[in-house]
Image 1 (cartoon, one colour):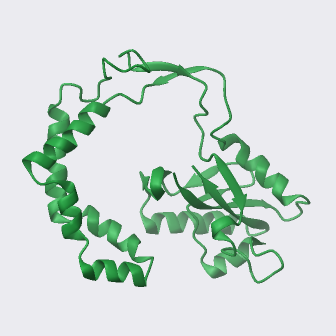
Image 2 (cartoon, rainbow, N blue to C red):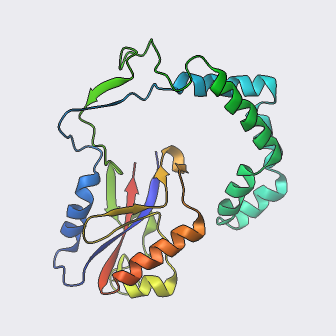
Image 3 (cartoon, rainbow, N blue to C red):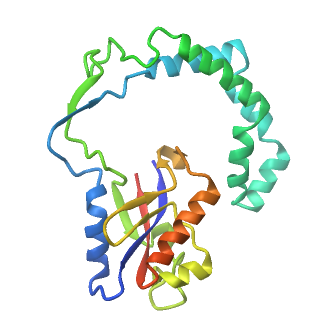
Length: 231
């Protein structure tokens, strides 16, 4: 499960800020049930992906060994000294030659698998059809949130409330959240947040920075509320 830093923008004249933030975040509540609808089952392609990893481990090298090779004492030392190094090491890991070779073998094994992009015929959720009926909120982004939390003080300007500040202050401080919610209720995010702080489908860092600054510029007259969201 993951925590991530989110900035919610509210009109400057908002009287009850927490209530307004709650209103803007409500559509993205994972616990909010919606009308039943049909959707693709999570089992589609899952068996092929899982077994392709095992094949790559056997045919090439175990991924755990490659991780140990990547995480040298020097990299660990740098990471401990500077938490931001993970932004750098993520890219280094993606382009690590041995990992790329492993991924090449895995991708080929997945494509060759009989259940590639197909549902599992033994799936108890969909009965092998690849479709099932659900009331799960398709817009879900969080299951719990609080103003501040582990990101307490990230947006504040030294005022009485360290988690609320004019948007102009965030531009000056170059504050960079994982997600932003604008006053019209629209959700903007760098990527899809998964478990254990891992995200996927991430935008390039420069693209995301430019996007966030553009949003902040358009809402300079708003207040920014720093929130800790969990999924």
